[in-house]
Length: 118
Length: 108
Image (cartoon, rainbow over all chains, first blue to last red; front, side):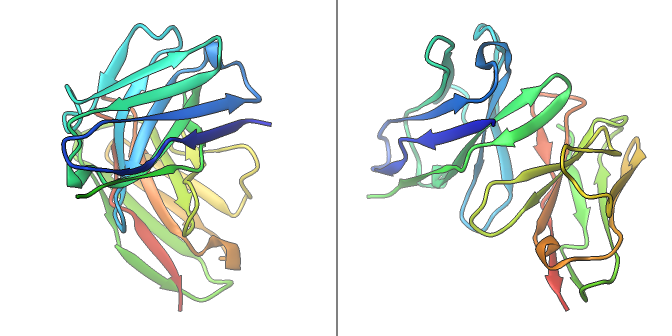
């Protein structure tokens, strides 16, 4: 079955960096486009980034452009988000998700909590 | 950026009753509209895409309708497991992909 397992969250100081990961199984990762979406405590969903299956083309939300970088390793079936210049408002649960054809965000990982605090 | 507006923010419903959730887009998204269900402490789950196509494993009591700027998610007879927050999402014109603010369906 399809599985996405996010990891790497934790507590980081403002201005710091962190890399979160999403390990996948149960589907052809190298053919799947992928997303990162976050949810601040008690808030709604915010799309952050998207990467095509080939890893070449990427899109970002304005809120993270220039600070976050989405990437993937198709040989390891892992999606990454490198986060730098972190701010307190980046505190959230970070979810990875996949796309199947024209079906958006059809499977989600369980999320990893990132807390930006001094 | 397409702004998605959901109403009401909270809907109080008794088990067995029906519920109608609304989602409005600031400009046409054609039928590129999805609905997600999220329970406390869980990741969102895809319910509907293409405005009216149920995702795999979603019960028939969930139905979606609409196109352009006005969309509706209807739950015909609420079961205990349906009390959750529901989000609409447009994927027509992006980036950015955008979500509505959510409708919480609570037990009356």
